[in-house]
Image (cartoon, rainbow, N blue to C red; front, side):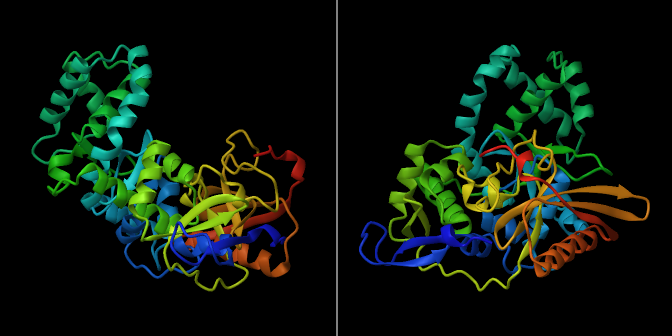
Length: 392
């Protein structure tokens, strides 16, 4: 594997003093900071807390993403944390679902929900959803869920229909429920079998002292750069859903806590004094779609040096599923098929790899079976031409 562009220039002094530098491996640093190089945490909720938030519109895949950063975690363990309310799934940051811990939910919503509401305003108008209608909807949802009740989306749709909200249509219902999440009215409740439910946020999340906006902004940036650095101001703005102006302001507020580095002539930031763990090679991961290792950055080129590819291009034949990363670099994709006696994992490699790397990938696939608590059958590591990929 080509390591030529893995080296970045690190500034050894204050974040704004650019004298003195030494090389650092960006892939190793990110694997380490994202808790992928070594699993030292035992609690899935602690993983989510450290990461700040974990994108989670694909529920099952997001649980696997958390488990890969947790020592010995299984699907059942992560599921229990969600059922117990130790991890909450709701709309926050960008307009999509994320896992967050209860202690962080209120201040993150206060910080990011206004921008999500503003970004959603055009689509709300297209669906004829007004502030008056949102208030009526929130009141109906509150009444239906009070007293520790949790209801599925289908059940809440009926609640809205009985309240004459006019919640017909999947998109319209989705916007009404998302607005209730952004308004801190509802959040995820315990699962009912394979179905998600909603519960009242006030009954699911303990009260917490409000943060001033600058305090919340600094804290979100602190979590981000500690677990995703080296990263740019634009990366943080993308991940948080905030503006580049806010991102730059947050970096200035954390001047003494961050170090500045240069990556391919781009200014990046990471926690001051950060040192990457030693990554035992080969280090292989079967990452889920939307994993924070790549979705947490606006510029994802750092993991695609071997094969020029956009890892989240949903039209791509390989990455309509999930991705395979070896030593921090993208090498292929994987898909799963749940069968009667376990899970079949189909692996597709798109670049030459060593036999030791092939074995590491196979071991990572077997770990996924252990996560599910079933036997994993590896369907084979197939060769794939690079020409099937779209450019970044």
